[in-house]
Amino acid sequence: SQTIHQWPATLVQPVGSPLSLECTVEGTSNPNLYWYRQAAGRGLQLLFYSVGIGQISSEVPQNLSASRPQDRQFILSSKKLLLSDSGFYLCAWSIGYEQYFGPGTRLTVT
Amino acid sequence: TQLLEQSPQFLSIQEGENLTVYCNSSSVFSSLQWYRQEPGEGPVLLVTVVTGGEVKKLKRLTFQFGDARKDSSLHITAAQPGDTGLYLCAGFNAGNNRKLIWGLGTSLAVNP
Image (cartoon, rainbow over all chains, first blue to last red; front, side, top):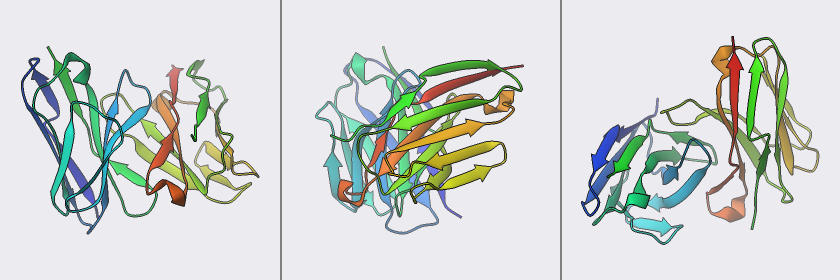
């Protein structure tokens, strides 16, 4: 069966510090991968998605970037965090149109 | 721009009551999904509907896709505290390059 991992679960970082969040998927090959941000327990904002290694599409111009160095690894990064980067970050994978989510990372920028 | 509007945004009911939440759009979708999310966790897929007029049941939850595939509803019978969570609908069209269109969710609280 497929499993998706995200880490860390919780992160507190000062403004201006770098960020790296990692997501890995097990049990499937060549999945589509997604990074979302969710604010205040409401809707999901799609940040990036990837249909293959090295292929990244950005949905919202911002302070973040994404990379897919391996088939089942998706990384969300920032060189310098802003206060507005705080939120709940979710990684998801899909083969068809149904998406399956990781447990999320709660990021607080102080 | 495709949008999905969910209503109500918030709902607080007593255990045992019935409720319906809605997901509406002016656009046609080839499929629509419902997810439930508990605080601090990722959304979990409940159901996918693909055919206009389709009805799917998952225990006490009944999902319906509108005939024109522009809207959907989720009905919960005899709600229980374990049904508490954020209910999200998401629509898919092949032309959206594997992206889903998400509603903002209905936050449901079922009080014992």
